[in-house]
Length: 104
Image 1 (cartoon, rainbow, N blue to C red):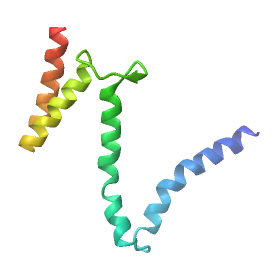
Image 2 (image 1 turned 90 degrees about the horizontal axis):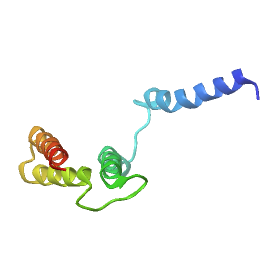
Image 3 (image 1 turned 45 degrees about the vertical axis):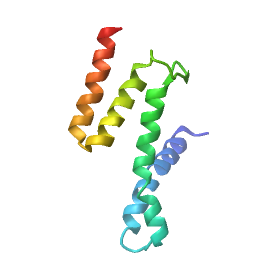
């Protein structure tokens, strides 16, 4: 395949999903159920990223006390659940991870 054609098609595939929502933003009205469902997309994506980062070590699921990422994530989750303060959650998670790294 021609390299320039391939580059052009890749640019089109990259550009269209970003440009179409902006072009149609004021013209298309989404159903209320779809809008409510789309509200959950960011938290679902963030949860998937955090869960994979915390629980997958060396390509396999690691649920053990040696997994400092999972322990720090659990501590941060608990702090967030009880305090609902973002800064305190971040500090608690980072402090827990750093402390576990020093102690091991």
